[in-house]
Amino acid sequence: MTMLFTATAAFPALADDSKIVVGFATAESGFMEAYDKPATDAALIRIDEINAAGGLLGKKIEVVKADTKSDRAEGAKAGLSVLDQGADLVVVSCDYDFGSPAALAAEAAGKVSFFLCAESVKAGIQGVGPHSFSASVLAAVQGATMAEWAYNKKEAKTFYRLLDSWTEYNKGICDGFDWMMPKLEAKGAKLLGQDTFKNDDPSIAAQISRIKALPKEPDAIMLCTMMPGGVSAIKQIRAAGINSMILNGSGMDGSYWLSAVPDLSNFYVPVQGSIYGDDPNPEVTKFNAAYKAKTGGDPSSMYVYPGYVMIDVWAKAVERAKSIDADAVVAELEKMKNEPTLFGSRTFTSELHHQNQTKYLVADTEKGKPAIIDSWTISEPIPLDALLK
Image (cartoon, one colour):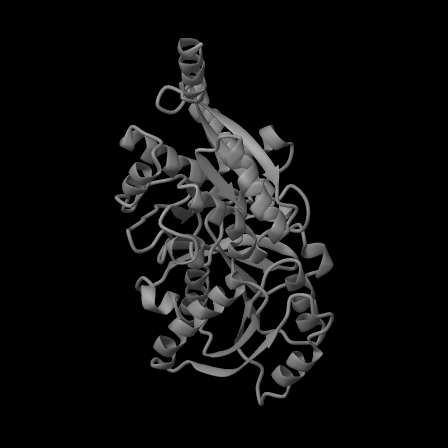
């Protein structure tokens, strides 16, 4: 009896060791699905590539999933669900507010978590813990990039700051803008005013009235918002006859919503790669074709791409660590400096599990059609103290 029990108890460990499990605690329903599903599909493409090449550490990667339903409470349950299914890596939603419950569950279990594309500094060490990372670029970099680019390349001298205070992502965009503005003001730029609204506000008429009351229309409006309410805000701004450049973060990339704002023009966002067939890197265009072959549709926004990057850098770290032990993998990730990926380089340190500087492409929408027109890298990395303000 004793010998039989001992032998039987050993077999599950051997069985578990025959595979590496990636658990997706992400949104398969609700509004976050628009961000999570494309990035998840891209991650699955990279997993398929790794498995086709012999796997990771000689083992196949197995995928398990649980739906967060775009709800924070369900997110915590989804994190626990994939952990119960043996997840070695827990992949969580593309936003700090909605992904952190699952990431915190992974941290408590001593597992590595990766936000699909969250861009708040909290989506990592600062808000979750030392085993948590994000595959995307900080929202603050987006705000800083667009402000500096608009000043240097579009000769924007006057700005207005309009913050949708709903999520940490939105606040991060404006934080980066706030960090950059004093540098631009020293060169002659001017902030004409600032205001706030909430993503689900049915009307921003009061905010628009204050913009229209200015002696002169601002050259650029830094609009720090995301779906779904961002569409309504943009529509109302243009319907009010305000034709200023609208600068936004990457959260408003994509053409899928543009029919709601017919003939939108003078609208700019930073992107890590182009979904429009005009990326200067031909490998991105090849990936877009592979994505369409797998999913039946074109990428809907640049938030497809961080999903691929996430699996790529994590798998490299596992191979270099020769282990899936969380601490060993984190140590290898933190050694990465300008690590090349298909969608730009990645650097992680023991202080920051995000990107605080990167080269962005700039997508310009004119008459309802987005296209890449330029690229920009902010003149210096955003320091940690500015990110934590």
